[in-house]
Image (cartoon, rainbow, N blue to C red):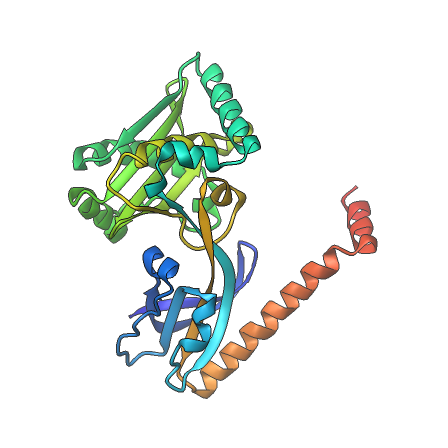
Length: 296
C-alpha cells in the first residue's frame, strides 16, 4: 500500500492532486494478452488502483461495493520475440523499415561513419552505464516534466542494482562523436522485458536517436531469453512502430464509498470532461484562427 496522488492534470501539467492510500495492482503483459483478471489483495486503505486492466474485463471485476472510476484508456503495445528478428522486421511496413535505415545511416554519418551503440547487462556493466545515462536523463522531458527519469539515488536505484544482480536489467547507450545522446534501460519481469526508463538529449531531436537506439535494442533482445517486449502503459507512435500487437486497456480506481472519496471521484470526472471538451473546442476552425492571430 502506498500514497497515490490522484491528479487533476492537463497534459504533463498537474494543477492539483489528492492523495489516497491505495494498493497498486499492475496487470503484467502475459496476463493482459491472455485476458486474466487480477487478484485483489486484502487492504485497509482507501482502495485499489488497477493499471492496464484489459477493457474487456471491466465488467468482471468485483468492486466489493467500492466506487469504480476509469482514469484513462489506452492501447498497451507489445512485441512477441517468438517471431524471430527477421520475421518481426519483415512485419514492419516498408515505410517503417526505410525510416529506420535512413535514421540509422544519418546518425552513423554524423558520428564519423560509425554507429556507436553499447549494450550493458551485468552488475558491473550497470555500474558503468548508470552515471553516463544519468547525464542524458537530466536533460530529458521525462525527468523535467514527468519525474520519470533514470533514478539518481535512493531506493529506486538500489532496486535497479538488485535487478541487475539478478540478471533482470538490459540497458543500451547511443553515442555521437563519443558523447552519449540517448539511453534505454529495461527491467525484466517473468518472461517479459519492460520499457522502463528511456530518454535522449533534446539537442539531437533532428537525428531521432530514440528510434535508432530502440531498433538496435530490439535486435539484441530477439537473441535473449525473453518472450515479450512490454511497452507498458500509454500510447505513442514509437511504441506502435516497434510492436507486433496491442491490447485495449484502462486504469481502474476502486475507492471505499466515503463522502470524501465520492466527492473526489466526482471532481476528477468533471475535470476530465472539462479538459476533453476544451480539447475538442480547440480544434474548431474559428478558435484555431483566433489562437493563430494571438500568437503573432
